[in-house]
Image (tube, rainbow, N blue to C red; front, side, top):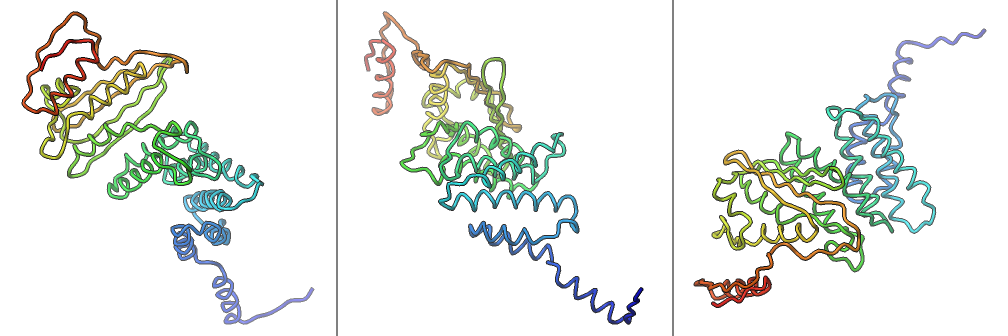
Length: 327
């Protein structure tokens, strides 16, 4: 047996040389994220693939695994290859990162990022615009960000998801809701207007019996009982000096009722407001007369209004309800 003897100085030299050859994870991650921010997903993947995961904490390992799957499908989506095997494998890896988090309290940044990345692959991936698969997971990511303490970062990420959901960047000949991606913007605008100094806006979608329920809550100024009573009245607004027309909620109500749904609000001054929209399951050929205006028969109404434009709208609304209106 041959024994090799080296000096202590030589040993430390070899040790330091070996360590020097190992990528510094914080530096490598910073470089990879810079490439990612520029849309260089293949380069970001290459950098992350050099990481020795055996030397990382469990949290860092989850992040590297997430980014490898995330950059895989994004880089693949930018190519014209017909082979979708890597794309589909990346989706399975993202699903696994989500699945292993059983408890809501354990949901971390990787869980939320994996939700968003997975639905991005359905919504903005090449040849894939699937709103039905995208929105439920976007909703999960939105809920997570809405509960974060870093308000500025959470607001930025929250709005990024909303804008991305409303306008998929890869869609050709696109118009809003073209792929079924209707987001109740009237209510979102009201919620944002109610939080001039910041706050939290939470959207939640759940299945209930044979329908779906959407709740939208803000931590804004809230409404008095009198304002709540008038909130859905056309042309009623508490924001006339800010350009409010008083049509947002009345239009939202009309749209919801066209789909046989209902909309309700619960509010307290200084606490915030929650809107709840409930929709039943209906068949594709279901037809219903809009319930926004009732059908009134054998009535004659005298409408008095000092604004000619408003008077014209009132006359048209009453006429559509079957009323003989005189103004």
